[in-house]
Image 1 (cartoon, rainbow, N blue to C red):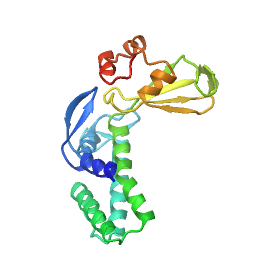
Image 2: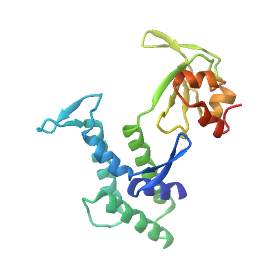
Image 3: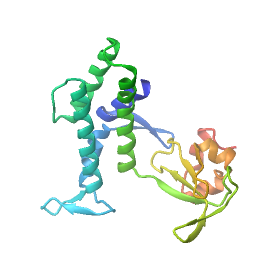
Image 4: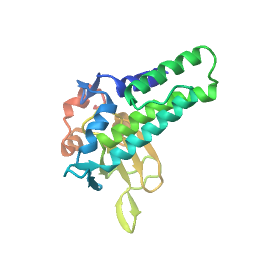
Length: 216
């Protein structure tokens, strides 16, 4: 439940997050999402009729979240609302009270607990998309260094990481066997690719990871 409570805070309140090992004050993610709706969308954007570029991916995500919130509030017998932030806070508070009173069963509670962290994940993926980097090291599962992707021979292992959120765990995936490894510790100790030379080439401040104790 702690992860869910933290997700609700990130969604609805000004809060502190750690980026590159440093504390950063952030606005509610639901506000950041709304503000990014008029940012240029590299995947294709439209216009609101006044020459303002509209990020279609963000608009779709906002609609998704409104729909999920409406569904949750309906389940909890709460009235419909257009206030997404207040509506989210109210739904979470009410759900906790209902759970404490044994009026929500285990199956439903697990779904509610997973709901808000899922929103956080979707918003951060949309607002701060990851960078992907091909790695020459062999996959720790199958040992392959190359894979065929749509007719091209490419590096088997690709790492998805977040330049603006270096404390967020990167994910290494093998395109040959589909194996995944998670975390900077895996990158360094198992995959053996996170060293100072590699980080420097990626434009990452190596001192960040020295502080995070993932570099030898």
